[in-house]
Length: 394
Image (cartoon, rainbow, N blue to C red; front, side, top):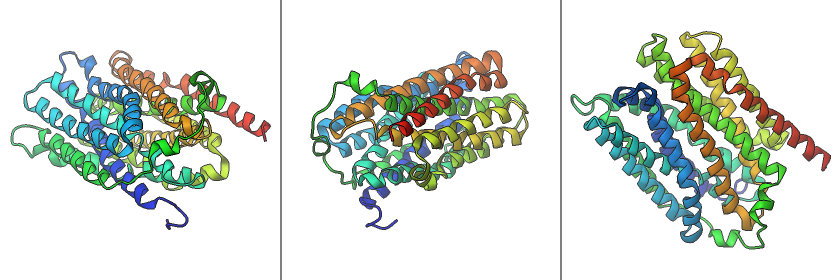
């Protein structure tokens, strides 16, 4: 990755490292929140509420984040987001210390808001490079999350006994430290002013969102993300429910996150070679493959292999959708469209996460996985339609 081949390398590296800190905090909560929520919640069907609230926080923060960054710049918004992450980790630790489900859930709301700001890292990376490097910039920033595959679950285990007689309080203290590290990294980022990038005439929002390419990109990325989070959230509960030891959940989540982010080192090249719609289609096929494995058995290897496919499928659907989105707006429209994209994606993800606990509690692991099939088929057909449309347009 040379400077001439990849303009804006320093900013992209800093954003990728910041992504690694943020995703490590998120993955740590994904590994622990449902299990700890099951212990703290007054009703077991609320076990996944902390994760659901985290995703709701991401959706709620997406539009204010765009507005704040338009007014004060990307870096100021990113620093505010990381500060929310620091507060979220501290509040999560306090919730465990006091055995307060309400505080634990509130901490995850702040953590989700942190992600709502951080989700703009990939767009900032695009703005810091030229058009030819856009898919590579997105891929490298998303690839920063590969660190989270190892750091997130390990922090959950390392911090388990840091505070005597208070399980996992130390893990959330470590999560707070990750937010501080992100603050230090983001303070070094130097990005072009959004106002300069946004010069020109913007179309009405109704006209922008009516574009088939925008609908396909947002719907595809939203379905891929919602399916991934819905299944990932329920996985630790399902493994415990099948009699597998709690320690088995850590490597499953770990290799799932590897599947999410390791392909990012070549997803950009695949998109340039085959086009974003086709890579999205590959993602949806892989996600359907996850369902086939998940419903075929309840052994450790079923969970492990299914979750790896779930991660790779998410990567193709999400990066493909993000790259396709860049074809749907003019420079003057970027923040407006990005805000619509983030709110739409994480609104659906929040609904899926809220549904996950209820579906698993009422019907079990197999029906939960089968429930996502219609969404995946619809997203696959939509991406096929947009590919045909683009080919017809030359």
